[in-house]
Amino acid sequence: MTSRLNPYLSFNGNAREAVEFYRDVFGGELTVSTFGEFGTPDPGIQDKVMHAQLETPQGYTLMASDCPPGMPWNPGDTVTVSLSGDAGDGLREVWARLAEGGTVGVPLEKQMWGDEFGQLVDRFGVPWMVNVVQPA
Image (tube, rainbow, N blue to C red):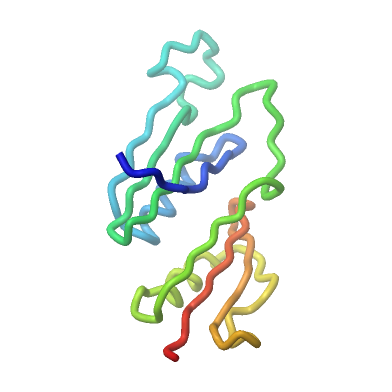
């Protein structure tokens, strides 16, 4: 098996909504397992996501879960998702979708290194950086 690096995102009860949104944005296969499926006796979290994984056609992997009771949830302070690629990868369209209902910190525009780059926090509190590489 080849090593890979991917983000693991934590949510405060809306992980299913978030990963379904990301599946709509990126496409791909989504698997979701709940705390109840793993036998938790706590009825308050049985339907919450213990682990979700999205494998996209572009080769991205996103993993996510809801924080169980007693585990702190601090949105956006530990994970930033970075997407880099060519204009043909559809990154401008992805940017536009992620920005819906979110907060743009740096607009997606040409930067001093020559690429288009932007930063935003999506409607679920997840920070994103998008870099569209420009032809040399």
